[in-house]
Image (cartoon, rainbow, N blue to C red; front, top):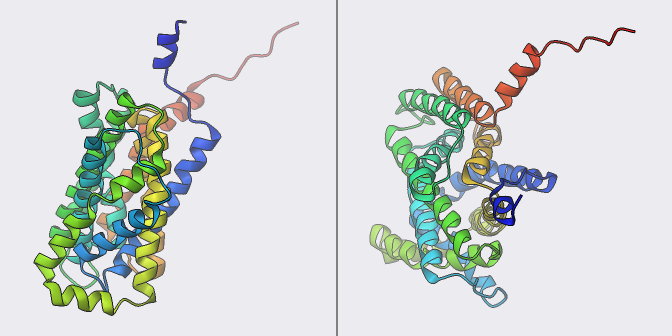
Length: 319
């Protein structure tokens, strides 16, 4: 096999890669509860500004800018920062429940495969498409199970969270494009410096939507819960988790990495139930199960299990 062919051969996920993926799943699963808690004292745009300021400003003196063109840092910062979390924070503020947000955000896997084909030339296997179609059907069931009562998912919250999933997919594609230019760039500097990009846009939106006096009032009244939310979202959910996620996207095709995020709802639903007593209704549970089934199909686990069942037992050799 030539070196060119070898470089195109997809790498298998190592034990370290699986550990990184599971670490991201746990952080992002609890992430939604922390967001919802932080929004009890901070407006969506101000929480976004503080989150990405925490993820970038304290570390700029210690982390050198990655050897990547600025266009990748700006594109990623606007898509993953302002786009994804601006819409998500606003959705949570307008009635999206933490548990269902962890499920609906997984539309990013479907959007990523849609974008990766025409933009990156990364072909998905039939099982990947089948799994994501099943997951999409589950998300549609969840969308029809919205309500307007206290503690229920609202339709506007669902739509905004769906938009956040699309922006997450755009940021995944930006990472894959960056890898083609500088394959060995370091994820931590990339995350830290790209996190600087959305700070001023978030702050500008906060001043425009809340007013200067309200922004100052929220900052002055920041309590321990708010500080914990900002630091958790900035350091763990952004710098650590997205650095690990970026490393996985550097090493593997988007279609192989992205479906792991479909495990986030397992943690997210449990964390939301424990923190806020959220209990999905029947339709939301059915939709969530469909999303998780889509993950199993997407990863080929259902097909492999079926083949083992159908495979006849080995016949012992006759003497």
